[in-house]
Length: 353
Ligand SMILES: Cc1cc2nc3c(=O)[nH]c(=O)nc-3n(C[C@H](O)[C@H](O)[C@H](O)COP(=O)(O)OP(=O)(O)OC[C@H]3O[C@@H](n4cnc5c(N)ncnc54)[C@H](O)[C@@H]3O)c2cc1C
Image (cartoon, rainbow, N blue to C red):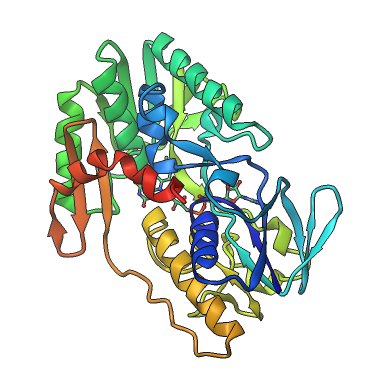
């Protein structure tokens, strides 16, 4: 049996393991992931306003999804044929898949605390919902898909809140088409959200419970601030032995088969690699499936399939429960946003085994 280590049990790591477990029995799989459960990030924002409904189906224990051995730890150093974890133990492998994802810059109040059990995380979500319910004056910083979806969720569910959405760009959702931006603006305005464009704010303190925004040398206080901008990549565990495989924003550089450019026994999938496409769960899933096939081909000495990055715009942004935007490369088909709602933000696809 070949020893396969997967680092990171998020959307791509777990999808990859499910695929390998379905298709081959020649691997002993070890997952290194600090969390006990998988949480579906796309459903988090709805779960914040609906912790009893969707909040209860948004995460599931990993052992209920896949059968592999789960080591609850963070990887601290990747070597050519082994990985070192937090307590100093070293786990040897024949093949490795890195799937450590990305984190939103500054979404700190809602972030996963890795040693939490699933129950503790469920309870944290109820607490976050109470904090939200008690806040009257709320700021959301960042008018990308996450900021826009969050603003709509809060405004639709709690119409008594005063919400201000700050965005550095000249239009909301600036990665999508101008029509999508216009619709987002129109719908958010209809929810009485105060939208401030072309404005980069700073913060009086960079703490997670910071409640003051600095703008033009003035302080603006809020009961609650959600910072929803920018992706952050952490590849610290690669720095010692694979420095040449890390780019300037800490993504891991891969070849067209999603293998580490300097070692073909190590694959890197999902948000953490430098593939030039939008960082989305949909593509993380696609990368996981092709990598599972490629790993099996590699061990059978068969040719590997190239991964073709998706070029163009693609996104489904919900605007509360009744409206949304579905941007496809050739135009918009907004009714598809309804499909995302109907499918409960695709939680079953991610969490079912
Ligand atoms: C609020 C929000 C809304 C989103 N909405 C959408 C959407 O509507 N549609 C869409 O397609 N995409 C959406 N995305 C993006 C999508 O969630 C990501 O693209 C996807 O989760 C990436 O999968 P991943 O496996 O690469 O990373 P993740 O799912 O982030 O998983 C990474 C895992 O690696 C683990 N890890 C990190 N470092 C280490 C380490 N050193 N050792 C061991 N484990 C480690 C983490 O604990 C985590 O479990 C959204 C993201 C967010 C945050």
